[in-house]
Image 1 (cartoon, rainbow over the protein chains, first blue to last red):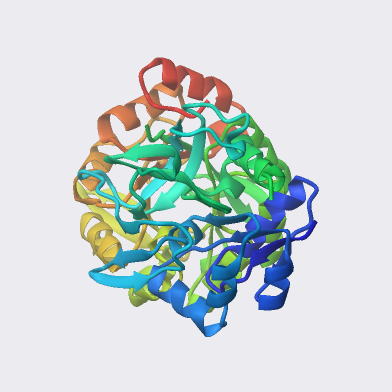
Image 2: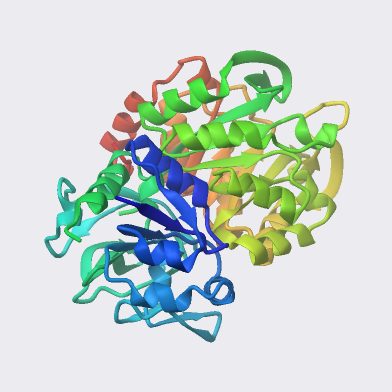
Length: 199
Length: 255
């Protein structure tokens, strides 16, 4: 098995790699399209602003390979947002990778401090092998200002002012809005499950 | 529901965790990775590492221990100390820090906040503020790591909080210096005033000595997190007990 963490140029790569190290799995960080296309499983991390991230991915020429993947893929945080069709940020529209249907927009916190930062509870909305051993009201660590709405592809939701998708799945592509690599045993379980979901 | 955060603060000096009273007289309390692991296992929601000598000595945080901490723990952590440039912040984030916190360098050159926000996103930019009450007014001090080098900035705390958030800070840590290390409770009055003007998450710091102090700061000042050092380092309060007690008192906690 080869697990690749895509080097988008805008992510906290080492903390994701360390999380897999703690599971006894050695992940490879790469921005090589050939290596990515041949991987068994792929992680797409990301932090920061969407326009910068998409620009970095396009500059590295990774968009075609990321759109062609049929093996299990997981986007984390901004990486989760980039798998959607479009992202609206600061009045501008950024085209996403379009691996899953839907649109990212600002999270309406209803006047609460923004970004949404800290540990929030998950509510399962669909069964999936990724959620094996995960229960309603388990906590995960979030830090974001934008989010995907709850839809058919939502596996688990969370709420901060408004409800939003905490975990999504469409075909082979998963997304976690929170940081599983920083979500203690709950996050570790989700990463472990991702390594086992049927390819 | 979003939980309130309990955040042990580890003041780092020369590669060890230390703690002083009102920023003076530091004593050794343990190794960085050992304490980080202990607190993560006890249920801390996040950790903050302040290299308290960094700004005054004009050096930066060692990426070496940042990487070791990132490798060891599975909760988020923030590093602070002498980060004066986008590149210096980037090095720490690349080593696995989730956030970087700036204090004196942001006061010296406020544009640094904008630059960090543009480069890495608001979510990882924390602005730490050392605030002191004098004659009923709240003022910001800088270079507080060394009492002999501490400076008045001429800035009012409430104004600086608003400016930092506008410039792109994703979180504010307010260190109320009158309360620091004396364990008589957080500065609820000041934190409540700051909460009113602070649009981003607000973390209270300085003064925690008992479970009631945490309860009060969450209920009365509505802060998102409470930071403490000596009560945890000296085992005055055990984190699992604290979180269970606060939960029983109606405060959302991750147990």
